[in-house]
Amino acid sequence: MYDIVIIGAGITGSMLSWKLSRYQLKVAVLEKENDIAEGATMANSAVVHVGYDPEDGSLKAELNVKGAQQYEAICKQLHCTYKTVGAYIAACGAEEEQQLLVLKGRADARGIPYRLLTGDEARAEEPNLSENVTQVLDFYTTAVIYPWEVAIACMESACQNGTELFLNAPCLNINKHEDCYVIETPKGIFRTRYVVNAAGVHAEEIHNMIAKADWHATPRKGEYYVLDQDAQPIRHIIFPVPSKEKGKGVLAIPTVYGNTLIGPNSDFLDDPDDNGTTVEGLAYVRTNISKTLKNIPLNRSIRTFAGIRPTTTCPDFIVEEVAGTPHFIDAVSIESPGLASSPAIADRIISILAETLKLTENPDADMSRRKPVVLADMTPEERNALIAKEPAYGKIICRCEQISEGEILDCIRRPCGAKTVKGIKKRARPGMGRCQGGFCEPKIVHILAAELGISPLDVVYDSEKSNILESENRL
Ligand SMILES: Cc1cc2nc3c(=O)[nH]c(=O)nc-3n(C[C@H](O)[C@H](O)[C@H](O)COP(=O)(O)OP(=O)(O)OC[C@H]3O[C@@H](n4cnc5c(N)ncnc54)[C@H](O)[C@@H]3O)c2cc1C
Image (cartoon, rainbow, N blue to C red):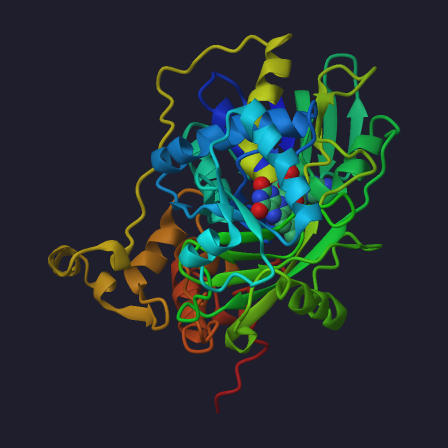
């Protein structure tokens, strides 16, 4: 019998399992996909919002501020990238300047540091800012991360401490028994005292397995352009003034590795898994980014992508024990700023659990993980010394991002290691560059096949059925 089963290995489930792994508990994480962080956590703006945006009195406001405050230390502890770039909220004209005053008031009340700049002062630091921008609120402690890196790192550390991760294990049904819940999956039956529903856009289906939800999932798509690293049109994250209808609006975001994201739009979806980009969505992004920025080189786009927000009819996060169903906890409606809030969402769930579950610290728990080798961060002397010891680090596989075979082998061999081409891309970044895997992907297929002891025909790009090669055609 498990103490806790967490359904979903996005940032909510992964952060929670990491924080729970310091206690003496038997925890399982069930993930329907073939890797960690495949839902909203895989495709978003990657911003650690500091907490000025959510409405006063909301759970979002409380958990955003508390979560963002923990992020830098967590990233340091888990050896994840964290880059403070600052966020400019750009107002065009008197009406939007009034809106900035509302955000400024929230920031004052929540202890969030900022600077108020005139349009010209802001343009001196960010020359690409539109001439229409008259005032800027600069939240200079705002950072960007690699969201899936944090989720994977959390899960890696949790699994080292004994958490059990089951991939390709969708929760199909849940039955409530007197002393436990029984969860059915294709990987078997899981008996558990507590359940945490962190299933993102599918959370309503999970909730309805034990009680009828009084909210409904209303997933919303957001689409983006990714610009090449050498086209860096901005230094800060540039936001328009947020609105009730359009949320945070279309942004420009400098990512941790020097690419720029432009997006997202915000369109309701019928199919919660429809993550394709659309002509209309990208046209909306193109039109709206020109409101705050003068010149965005969209001709330097190397790819487009879309993410799906796990929004519901409830405008706030729902992080609570389900009424009338003891020991079943929802972590649902986790739309933006869910990434930034995730450390505090986990803390809130742990405090709910602690009301009825004895939490005893595990003295052997190690809350860190082994630092991955990143060749690009090393001095030439350090690289030479490493290559002399381990020649695989001297063989560059991804030319765009300069990723070596050694780094790829390491990310396959780590706990919760990569088993798919996309899994390697998420962990070590080959294929993230200009050629988008055009040169390195065939080599990666062969490295994966050799490491996993399978035929290259059985190597998949992402899901269990996404084989890349169909048949051997050499004569
Ligand atoms: C376009 C966009 C931009 C965003 N920008 C930001 C931002 O800049 N900053 C920020 O803080 N937040 C942002 N967010 C919000 C943030 O991405 C989400 O709040 C966060 O990723 C939600 O994490 P999660 O783990 O709750 O959900 P997910 O990441 O969706 O994880 C849910 C997991 O549950 C799994 N699952 C579903 N059904 C089942 C089942 N039956 N059995 C087992 N597993 C199941 C899924 O496969 C998935 O892996 C953005 C979101 C989007 C879409």
